[in-house]
Image 1 (cartoon, rainbow, N blue to C red):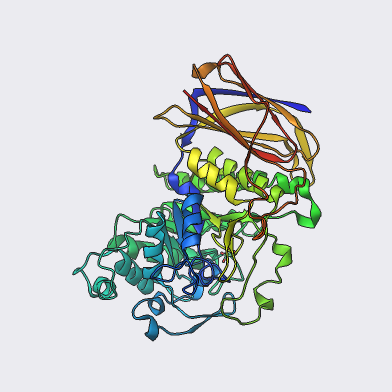
Image 2 (cartoon, rainbow, N blue to C red):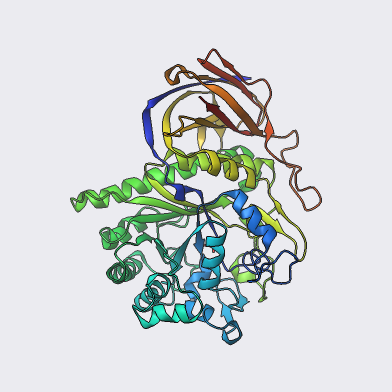
Length: 502
Ligand code: AHR
């Protein structure tokens, strides 16, 4: 057992959480769209072919925004293929995932579905094989009022009178990656992104734009890519993107449990890089980060895009997540919250089947993976103002990051109700932690609940047969002593949500 002491004061804050921090991602890849959210033959399908059981779980997950349609897929996508009468839509090759794209679901169907489950769509434009024209056309198609342009009226003729009102747009996807269709150097991409952004802004000045940053922190161009891209785009964009996927490399679970150290370092480095570009330009503008792909992904199990057989709707990267993965996902969410002053948007990748919190069987059930739970709880309760935490804890030795804090704690206060939500991760696989939180600065508090994700078997998973094998469970022994001090025990490898009310 080791001790963790936390000091908190509502007067000392990091920033306000942008609700878009709890985003998700749907790509035309594997069984995310076809066989995931969309399965017309499923017993729960609605009149448009979207699964009702999946929609229900998506609502429960509580994601706020959803990035679409890719991912690598977008870099070869012609959005026009996916609108208009379905019977007339072309069947195309998807070069990213070597599959056939039937185009049964496109922008109109997707936006209607997303709004129906209470999520705002974020659209990505293709800057791999296409450019300014296609991006502006899509913007007009999606956002312009009826009667304004022929492109907007095409949407109306296709049965969607109201504009889709897309606020946030991604200028391409992972353009730094040699695997990307239409991969570019930072200068090439920076110019194209700037030209596209300028034209899109002229068409609709109210949109927010995301320039592509690095695909992960190990990219040889990490940092340089962002500097060069932002030298082209700084005045034209609002956010720069980052992506990161984590797994226990070579079985190194201790480093895996501390994955958020990498995410934290990425955010700090790229915020500094953006600020450098801003400083050189004597700009008052402060860019934020869109961490629009993040998750646990067992990439070593995936042969890579080159090794794929050409299929339609074939399963791709359907990782089954365990308790340890859920702890890591909870910890990654805490890293995003701790940097809410610089991270405006974040999208867990992806939503269903493809490294998703939800799994489905064709014609059968849909269920929550372990990682569903920390996301749903955090998205529901961690709203408001992130407080600065002073944490004294033991170090945990890791091969990848050296010594890291064995416990991480994040505190979020709802400015309206005053409710305080504490999130905590014990990353030690062997030692429980004795948590003590000094709450003297908060006045009278009541312990509402303490839920934990932990298990005697950290490799336990949820399956179609046992969908609730791993769920958040009430912790025992948590005490709020005279409004002053909260004490709790955090078992090894565990994630926690503690809520305190008036
Ligand atoms: O989410 C899977 C893939 O990971 C996305 O298509 C791509 O952007 C990233 O490399």
